[in-house]
Every structure is written in structure tokens, then in C-alpha cells.
Amino acid sequence: MADPATTPAQPKGATGVLVLADGTVMWGKGFGHAGSAVGEVCFNTAMTGYQEVMTDPSYAGQIVTFTFPHIGNVGANAEDVESHVEGAVGCVVREDPTLPSNFRSERSFDNWMKGHLKIGLSGIDTRALTRRIRLSGAPNAVIAHDPKGNFDIRDLLNRAQDWPGLEGMDLARIVTREKDEEWTGGPWMLGHGYAASQGDERPHVVAVDYGGKDNIFRNLVKAGARVTVVPARTTFDEIMALKPAGVFLSNGPGDPAATGEYAVPVIRKLLDADVPIFGICLGHQMLAIAAGGKTVKMHQGHRGANHPVQRVGGVWDATEDLVEITSMNHGFAVDAATLPEGVVETHRSLFDGSNCGISISGKKAFGVQYHPEASPGPQDSFYLFEKFVGMLG
Image 1 (cartoon, one colour):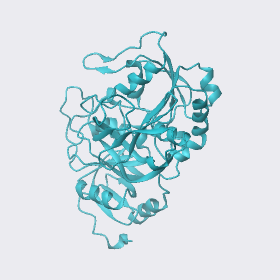
Image 2 (cartoon, rainbow, N blue to C red; image 1 turned 90 degrees about the horizontal axis):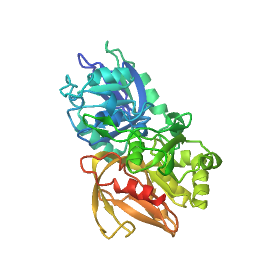
Image 3 (spheres, rainbow, N blue to C red; image 1 turned 180 degrees about the vertical axis):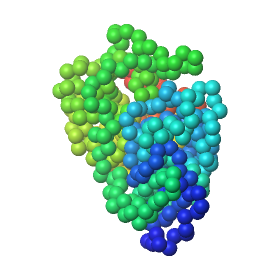
Image 4 (cartoon, one colour; image 1 turned 120 degrees about the vertical axis):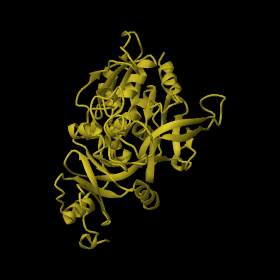
């Protein structure tokens, strides 16, 4: 382990620092909120959507390294926020954020980060940091910003080393909403904003919020559902009292096995009751656990808006081997080798072969690892929402 006393001297003008748990110290320029935060350092390969990334609850407990060098150049606005609960604690970027140049911008990225208490660090060799994560895995670290440049490196290192990491951590309890909410509003359109919901005669979906992105609920509305969003610890009886035509299991942060301690028994009861179920990301992982599979912590995870996923298993339609370009954000995955008989793998990553989808034979229940609501350019995956709502009758 490196000794902070032997690290290179703090460069002149350095107002931000990233301290990895192995003692590595990376100096840069801080922006956004002044303070410090601990988390797991990951990288995201998306070229756009930095505001959506930073407000995705699935990034709770994480520091996002953006591989695209120009982050912040289109500013920020209230419409592109994915959630008002905790998301990423901070971000690492190559270039200093510039003044915004976009007609939709309402404030600078720096100012927006301040308002959301998120710490930014620029001037970092993000290619080197990304390579480090790919080779050695996602490290724990502390990101810090002080406009006066005063840092206690040894204390920051101790905090990074003492943090237990995401494995075994239930973060859904932190980011879930506290009470039921009747969801209103559909997808966003330029010049129109968010569409309005259309009538109560639509099939009723109860969406369990483990840290859900708002755009998921909007897409359920677009596909023809009426949506009620409920907290992560909502019981089977409480869900059934809402008389759902189907149940949606949302994305979220942390270890699916930890959240699954209270969520999986509920999901199993829903399966036994033959309630139609659709899960995304964390919801997909816990659906797999409920069906008898297991999940594993990934070496580096999948995060970006350009991940190719192949349809397999012949479940969806005749277009076997069709490839979808998807958006992903996950550090845990379903271990396909542990899926029992009757649970069919439906999607597979073309990057590393990891599981990206399942369907449970004899049940109206399926899940995908990626984010079909994100629409990173092509809207390849919206059929999943249509398929789910179409099951509800």
C-alpha cells in the first residue's frame, strides 16, 4: 500500500482530490459541492445524459468516472432529473466543465452539482483511471473538494479503507420513497414537456420502488398502464390490496442479495399467486433469486449507453439473435449457470456473455438487466413495456 507521506506534492491550484483505498492519490480541480464523500469508483461510457446518470438512484454509494471528456457542456435543467433522492455522490471528469451552450440549459453543471450536494473533480486522466478499474476492479475511494485546497490525505485514506463496499449493502432502503404514490405523467417531448396520464380504465400496475428512475414509470404509462409506486418494503398483502393487474420491480442500488432478504419472499408470493411481473436491473436480479438463481458481484460492472445485448432462448419472437443497443448501470449480475430448470435466459451481453434477461416458464414473469427506458438513441427495447402491459388484459 502506498504511503500518503510519499505521494507527489499537491500541485499548485489543486482544489480537489480522489484518494483510492490502496493509497493512490489523484489531484485535480474541484467543482460542485465543497466537501468529501466515500464510495465505489466506477466508469460510465455514455457521451450524453450526464445529468440523468448523476440522478439515477442506482448510482447511490458510487463515484462516476465519465470516459467522455466533455461533461457539463450543455448545462443542466429541471426536466432531465431522474429522481430527487440520492444518486451518485460525485463524478470524475477529464476537462473542466465549461459554461453551458444549449437552449434547454437553466444553470451550469457546476451550479447544479452544488445545489444537489454532489462533488466534482476535473483534470483527471480518466483513461488511466478507467484502465485501472478494468484491470483491478472498482475500488473504494474518497472524493473531496475544498476551494482553499486544504486536505488531510491520511484521514481521507482511512475513510476509503474503512468503508465496507457495496457487497452485502442494502441501499434500496435509503433511496425508496416513504409512501404510496399515484404516478402521473408520461414521456417527455420537445416543446411539450411531460405527457399527461390518460384515464383510470387502464390496467393497474403496482411498481415497487427499490430506487426507480422516473422514466421507467413514464414508459409504463406510455405503454398503456395506470401506475401506483410503492415503497421497497411493501408487503405482499399490501400490494394485493391495491388490486394490481401486474407488478413491476424497479432498478436500484446495492447488493440484490441484501435487499432480497425482505424483497424476495414478497416476489415469491407474487409468483405463487400468478401475478404478472416485470423486473428491471435490481428488480430483474431479485426476480432471478426468487426463481432459484443466484447473483454475483462483477469485476467492473456495466455502465454506459452503448452496450450490445443479444436476444437468445427463442422466448420473445422469431427474430432470434437480434441485437439491441442498450443502456446499462449495474455492478452485480445474475449467474446464468445457477438458473434452475424452467427459468430461461432471454438476453445476453455481447461484451462478456453475462446474463441480461430471464423469463419464467409457466408464469407471466420476466426481467432484463439493462434499462429499456433510457433509449440511448435507438428505442430498441420499448417492446418490453408493451409486452408487459399486453399481458395484463
